[in-house]
Image (cartoon, rainbow, N blue to C red):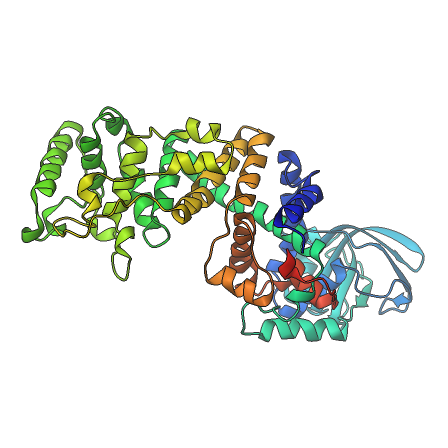
Length: 480
């Protein structure tokens, strides 16, 4: 069994000329959109499958004939069109020995040409071939030109396997094939999915940059805060961080008690309706008075405390504790974006993101209810999640924005050297034969689940493609 580092290096070699390069990553993503855009807007599963068969040339190389009986040679199937108009553009075909260069339109039935009103649309005048599952009607362009048509048959085995995937209720649907997909396919696909996952998170970062007027420091704080929600309270933490007046907080950064009043007060956790009278201890009263003073000084408005979720939550994840830990990062460790960008090794990030709480919170999970003393420092697994959901995405997004290839590559490497997440998704893939050995791989599998498996988008998935092609290898994916 080869080590995870061997396969990580193999994946890096696979993508060294494009996946880890900023300009080439742009190209990869744009090309992928071109290749797969047509599949997402098809009306039927059969039409999606026709697209797939056409794109991957799963038809005879010779002996094709149009419905009119002319010899047909497919020189180039063209590129899928991601915009309105014909499905594939810049195709090259020979019809009766005559070379045609233009666009190709695909339909389940030839009569769909008229049902979609392509005969009245000038954008379809340059179509040179109409590819159909069933030819039940002629097709003419707006100019009156009669289009050559060819009936494209979906290979029986491909159709059968595709129907199997769509009907499969077990997750992942291709679980029977996973142990037999070759290592190169798995490694390259996971690397591409990791890139997609980082790009997906970059979209969120860019949205916040736009809302904050390009304030990277604020966006870093919002992203870090969201990660402190650890899923359940992510939205509430994000709302809190977005509304918190960091400029005002910065003026009191040297006073931990005041920072805590800012944080807990802004979170709506210092209002009387959030704490029963018998639980309003001296510490709560002091913080409440301090926040009242700060409110008058800076015209503060707290968020609704009801936004926080407590039901069926472990006490260590209560927002009071997480906010107290954030106070430590902000006050004691002076955590900011520049320090994040300076970090190199995973150990640097763990040191940077390690947080503890004050003595009061060592014996409390919320106000007025004392518990056994516990340090409540961030655990290693929690710091891993902060690295995965805040540090790596911010570094990648910053590198993309500033055309800094080294930062983008550092984000990838950081994920590759961080432990994989353990959740339902990763456990399901492990049961199927694919165990994530790094955060890069677990993030890839999360992307795969949400954007491919849940949407039954097997035609866009390389595992699905291997399944449809009937590829079987003896090399076990569980060795990756």
